[in-house]
Image 1 (cartoon, helix red, strand yellow):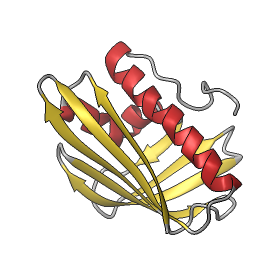
Image 2 (tube, helix red, strand yellow; image 1 turned 90 degrees about the vertical axis):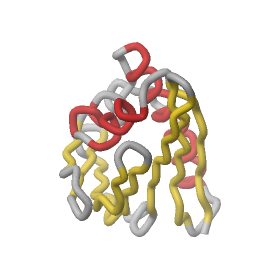
Image 3 (cartoon, helix red, strand yellow; image 1 turned 30 degrees about the vertical axis):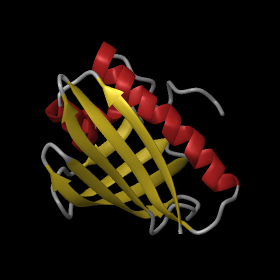
Image 4 (cartoon, one colour; image 1 turned 120 degrees about the vertical axis):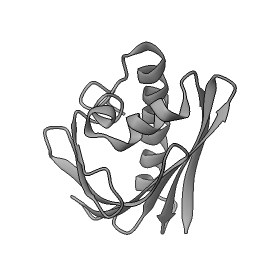
Length: 145
């Protein structure tokens, strides 16, 4: 199984980063405006893209405030992300937070994997921009890759 990983430092507390990852309002400011999530372990979430032409359904697998968030991707419109897992690990570093992101479980290195790698990199930077400036680039305000 293949994984995508990204590492970045955000000038925000782990608590603020955690809120941006665990609430519908937070997620809608950096990943997609079409975001609904029940922020408890076992809770369901659904994230739509491009007018809900593409959607991902998740189950909240793990929450450890303010250091860890885990989602199991249950289904996606085209099935390409089904059974994969996303995790965010957070650690304080002075007044900043180090974010270690991973998306695990890709069966193949292919175009879908390459596209997901590019998009996740963009959205992780969007998370940083949202937390540091108040303005991220969530879908549909992202760029067309």
